[in-house]
Length: 369
Ligand SMILES: Cc1cc2nc3c(=O)[nH]c(=O)nc-3n(C[C@H](O)[C@H](O)[C@H](O)COP(=O)(O)OP(=O)(O)OC[C@H]3O[C@@H](n4cnc5c(N)ncnc54)[C@H](O)[C@@H]3O)c2cc1C
Image (cartoon, rainbow, N blue to C red; front, side, top):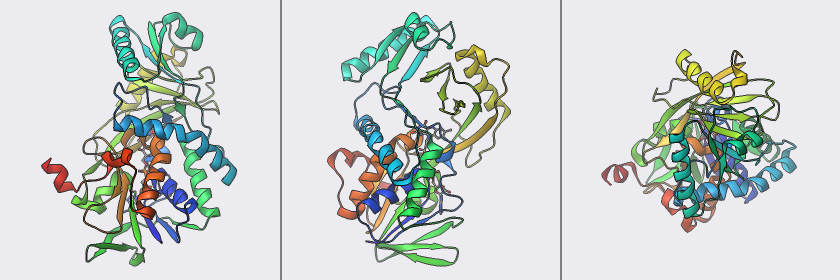
């Protein structure tokens, strides 16, 4: 089975790797720019299936499953490519700054406990012991023990290296103009005036997926996120949410602060307002940052599908056409499980029951329901 993948972000590249491991034939990835340089590069790399939910639903199970796949996935990539993606499962903390916020956190914590989600409620003193550099104004917190982060830029670098070493052709600066569909079957795509033929075509084009898929599945739109980074900050060990933002301490001493959530079309400009609000969150959480200048700033586009959940599987009504997109704020977390599911869908023509909620309905069906 020869597979054509459109989009060389974390989802397209992880799918390519899994397809290769599972024995697919020729695998080609067409990337309009440079592989891994869009949302997958802009992300903060948090793996946080528990910190933001209170409900054990299909999306939660998908996120948990992917989080559990990460240690094996990271070890395999290291073995295959020599690239360490810096998987860190020290834990993720949520911080509350007022009695109201502490009450909300306590309520969420008890809902999580009832649902079977593991979390520890922390007093102000627990928080100070765990992370002494955090603000003394923090009155309570919650700790999610096996949540954490990866260095997402090394992840895409590792997946690109795997592709290079394993006969996966990644063709950069190659924007696909249109899918070629004949008699209800996807047979390839047109790109730079050339037709690339394949037995299966996978659209993994992130925030741009609907440009190609049109109404064949629910609409995917871009949601802009800005991030700033400080350097030489090594006094924080956990990922921390609070004060309207989050902090992600990297192994090399960089500290990422994210992220805005904006409806700005495909614009990726960094704005003064965005930076100001991120600096505000950062300084509230870590007063030691006051007066320090960020060394880097960037923005990326999260792929958001109508309904907020990813679309993973076969496109209804077109044989040989598949999609893996709409991962919104969780594409780094969901890359390993998405790669496995889409590989089963492409090679075996089926998906496991737990993935059924993410099968794409056509755009028209989704609009009607
Ligand atoms: C600021 C920010 C913070 C984030 N933080 C986190 C986080 O902490 N944890 C987490 O799990 N997720 C996070 N995310 C979300 C995550 O980055 C995305 O869900 C994920 O990267 C999506 O991967 P993708 O491969 O679908 O998209 P992308 O990485 O955008 O890749 C899609 C690729 O398709 C290419 N493409 C598009 N159209 C075409 C075409 N016509 N022809 C050829 N190629 C095409 C693009 O150039 C692009 O390279 C964050 C996102 C942002 C923006």
